[in-house]
Image (cartoon, rainbow, N blue to C red; front, side, top):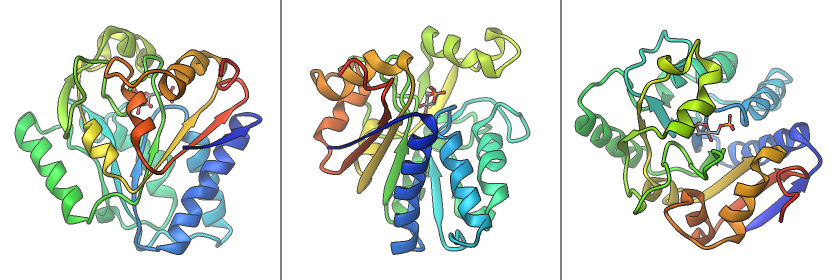
Length: 241
Ligand code: GLP
């Protein structure tokens, strides 16, 4: 694992955007695995800025997102579909049909998960997967569990995740209880993985995930076994390492 220790959120965002840009420039039709949450917003902003300056071209890029709430339609402002369009897709020249997320409106979980796995396979796999991390070590919506989930699946969100994500909703009651997420196996198949973490509130989990034992109780800890992981974290997030 390569660790880039940076000063703050802004530097983390710039470094992550640099790494993603290098990928797009060296392979214009790259398959980018993308993430939501507050952590990647600055990275997307930086990419948009460079696109607007004419330094980046997304016309051939393909994207697959990690996860989506089950039951939220695309117009719902809390859906990850809406998030991705607002922060990135509607602001760069990526053709809409080259962007993919699990379909939260498909009530048939098994079918939807199979469709998403097949889709990723048909794209030839993920070149680089961007990841944030939850306070309990979840990646995508892979919550702490007895075992690592291999493929895209439907999960019941943990109470702590519902509480952490309720800030985006009117109330905790409105946070969906289920989501579709790539599995740990899906994530590990990415050629390269880029993890971004910022803030003191993530310091404990960063230490556990990257310097602690590998266990499904800390889903991100499995990343220690991947041959090409880049961790970009700010001083506050690395303060307990
Ligand atoms: C959500 C997302 C994750 C994300 C996590 C952390 O649960 N499904 O992909 O990594 O939140 O979010 P934040 O970056 O806001 O701390």
